[in-house]
Length: 163
Image (cartoon, rainbow, N blue to C red; front, side, top):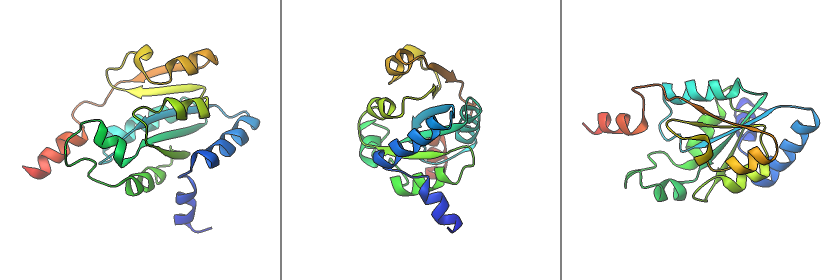
């Protein structure tokens, strides 16, 4: 398998991810889940993902599809990079074990599939407001919020480029 093929193998459909999760659970791996758009990958994203990965053995990232990014009202120009590009860039990060693209407004259904031990979200979210909170808590998992690294955002980078 080439390095590119190895990276591409991290990008999985729900069916592939279900098989991967079953294998990891069989091997008693602690699974961490987070989600986001990750449009222009920056230091804040990399820091956040590394911190999330440290909370378990395998980090699964739910990646907003292009359609779901548009629904989030991040502006007409978003996403800047298409979902395939964003997924491959995410796959290149050592801290990320698997990526699954989702179309829904929230990753709640994907979280039900993964049943993570730890659900992580960044920023100013309260744990009980995070999509999937009830699912994770009901199965005995934990929900954690990681503070954003100040001064880093895709929106700020986009404004700087346009300015």
